[in-house]
Each structure stands twice: as C-alpha cells, then as structure tokens.
Image (cartoon, rainbow over all chains, first blue to last red; front, side):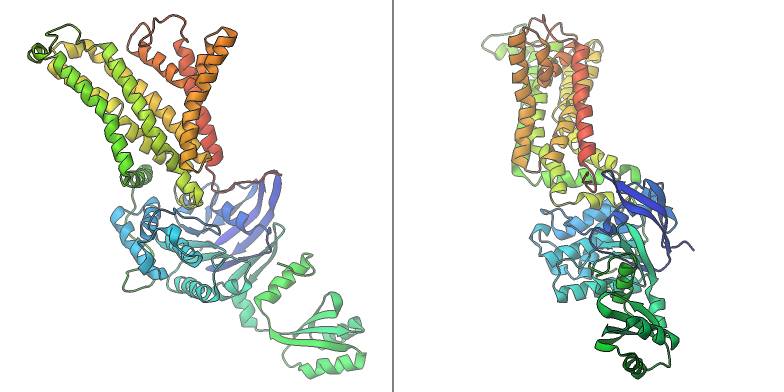
Length: 312
Length: 293
C-alpha cells in the first residue's frame, strides 16, 4: 500500500528564495498533522502538493501520485480547504458548493444533490440560500469545508481550518473533521499552528521549522508508549543531579534557566527525584507532572533544531 | 451523504468528461448574466440593428414594397459586399459595448474573494479556466456579430435570385474570420483587464481607455511627426482595414483608401495585443502569488 505522503528531497524555491530545503520523509497514517511556526513552510508544502508550486528538486507524492508529474490525477483525489477567504460572494452558499462540485466533474443533478447534503452535513442547512458574502467568519469556514468534501475526495487537505473561530464553533468543526475521518477511509492532511487541533484529529505529525523537517512523530505510538514526564525548574548543580537521575534509568533533557524534562521509567517514583535533589543540593522551584503530549514533541523538535524558546 | 443520514460518504457515481468541464464555468457565468435586466436589455439592443438590416434586405428584394415608398423603385437598395461590411462594423461596435459590460466581471469576481485556488485545486487547469471564461465572451459576442451577419446573408440568399448565393459565397469567410479576430481580441483584453482590476466600473473604464486613449495619442503622434503609423494604436481602425480587405473593398468604408496602414501590419498589431493579453492572464491567474525578494 502506498504511503499517504512521501517526500523525497523536496526543495521549493519561490521568488529566488529556498522555502523548503530538501524535505525527506514518509508519512503513513490516515490523518497527518502539519505543524510549525509561522513561515516554517506548511502552506508552501500544501501548495506544492496541490501543484501550485513546482519543486526545484525532489518530489512530493500523495497516495503514490507525484504532485508535479501526476498533478491532475492527484488533484482529482483531493478536497482542499484553504486558509484564506475563498468563495464567490454573490453566489448563494448551496449554488457555490454545487458549482465547485461540477468543476470537480460531478454531473449537474448529482452536484446539486451533494451540495445540499454537504450543507446539511456541516450544519449550515438553514443558511444555504443566502449569499456566501453575508456569512459570518465561522460559517465561511464551514462553507469552505463543504466545498472541500462535496465531491467525495480521498484526501482532504485542511489549511488552518479553525482560524478565527470561537471555541464552540472550533469544537464543532473539530468534531466534524473527526467524524469525516472515522466515518470513511478518507486521508487527512491538517495544517495548523494550534497543537490541540492536530492532537485531536491526527495520528501522525510532521513538524516543520525554517523549511526543514524538525520531526516526524507517530502520535498513536507516542500515546501508546504513554510515558510519564516531569518538568522541573531547578536551581543548583544540574549536571550531577541529571547524571544521578540517569543512573536511575530516567531520560533527562536540560534546557536554559534550569529547566529540566525527565522521562520517568516504570518503577521510579517522584519521591526519588526529590531525594536525589536533596542529596545534590538542588532546589526544585517548580514541578509539573504530566504525560507526554504533542506540545512536548513540538517543543522538543523546536529546541533540537535551535529554537530555544520554542516560540510559535 | 444523504441529508437524513447526516454522515459523510464518498462519491461513487460517474464523472463528466474532463475535456468539456470548462463549460461549467460558461454555464454558470451565463446564468448569472441573465439575472441582470440591464444585460438582457443591452443584448436586445445589440440585435436591433440586425432587424433594420433585415428590413433593408427585404425591401431590396421586393419591388412591390419599393413601389410603396415615396421614392418609388430605385437602384439604391444594393446588398453587396459594402452592405455586409457596414453590418459587420455596426455589429462589432455593439459587441464592443457588450464586452465592456460583461468582460470586467468574469474573472474579477473569482479573484476578489480568492476563489481561484478552489478551481485550481481540482482537476482543472488554468487553461481550462481561461477557456471557460473565453467561451462566455465567444458565445455572447458571436451572437451579435457573425451569427446575425450569417443569418442576414442567408436571408438575402433566400430572397435574391438563385445565383446570388454562389457568386457571394466567399463573403462567409470574411464574416466569420473578421468576427473571430475581433471577438478574440475583445475577449482577451477584457479578461486581462478583469484579472488586473477588480472593480467593475474601473475595469469598464480601463477597457474604454485602452481603445480610445491610444487611438487619440496615435493621431497626435501622426499630426506631429507627419506619419500614418500612429494609427497602429487605433484597434477599431485596424479592424476596419482588415474588414475592408476581407470584403474585397478597395478602401475602408467611407474613405478614399490612400495613405492607409498595410493589412499585414494591422493583423500583426491585433495578434500582438492578443498575445500580450495572454501574457497578462498568465501572470495574474495564479493560485498563489509569489513575493519576490
């Protein structure tokens, strides 16, 4: 079976600048999250997959189809929800979605039928005859989702789908996305800078930074591993403290300002950490005990690639 | 994904042929156009001259009606190449007005709210997109140029003596060809303007400016330098030169024919304008803009 996304040394140059620097990786899960700070290259990667940009080197494949050489065949499998406004303001919602369905190749009658279904499905049934230009921001996001799913794509690409939505609307959209994912064999590529969106909808995450892959992480496996984390803020002899903890089987990562992350192995209790700290004369100013989360994966990836503050 | 089930389901039905999919854009554009009363009025008005020309042809071929006229039967009713040149000039000017109203909204509406990526993220190329929009202009302008001209030709052929059609059959070629170059040029210019200027009123103004200001500047240039080449900027003039030669007329209608731009130069400029418009469309119709630097 073909991987969902396969990147082979993908390099993209725009306006004389290299935006994506030789991305290489294979993503096999059905729901893939694309994370990264602003300017990391998330949208450029999506645009390249859609064939809007041509790679200067390497290739990107989705379900085995090359984005450059099999662009049309690939786009026939894709439903795309762009980040920015994308609609025809004077058209009624249902007519707009029907239009997009017909452009995708659906016959007129089926396009009309599925446009109504898609509208009801995303929860805009009552507003379907209103011009799209009169919709609220949240409704416009839902119309974009409706036009992306109306033709029944095999790959759904969502670029910042919850942008500008209030918490209830965001929750509803995330539920919809999960429902789409779970109710069919559709593949999902979701780009977001909101870790929670990705965590709630995706199985695998590709983290980009400065146009390079900072990390590829399988969230399902990470969740299964279910490792315990301790986040400490300390003052004192960090080096001897961490080396002693490592002697107990802990994995330690030391950051600036005395911040230490500890992966606790099974059988080691927190009281032993306090004991080692007391022995070594290390003050523990703050302790946060938590499970491994996407935030950790993200921050770790950011820090490994040089963004010490992990700022998004 | 049935409404009552409220759950997502992929589409498994048949698809329309890819080659004809650009016509979806044309169909939707026409549906939107015919919602405008002003457009319908403009279209009807554009066809009114053809009714007068039809009346003329009827009178020209009917001695009984000519006898009822105050002047009586006369040889003034002549339906020959010059008459069809006049029809073409009138109808192509009507096409210009229609083009000024319709052209500016065709692409601007999609660009204003960023709908272009939605088209291009589907199995639909930029060429398909331009073709779909060009078809709108092509069909619309055809309906007021070569279609009524050929209908009038057919009417004349039916009313005149049987040998008229064979001796005048050659006129079908200039009717169709000259209309085609005029329609193509108007369509491409208006689509290029529509891709640049998003406000309809401004875009309409820009189209008028493109046709009248360069023509005026060309005449000024001619007057100052003492040449005729400034007329290369007058697209209507160039079209009339091509039209006159197409209809085997010695000169442009209403002129003596001396001191005119050579026909190949006229063709060259019109083709150059078409190519320039295509270059502009190619530059503007992108799913994503690239910021250089």
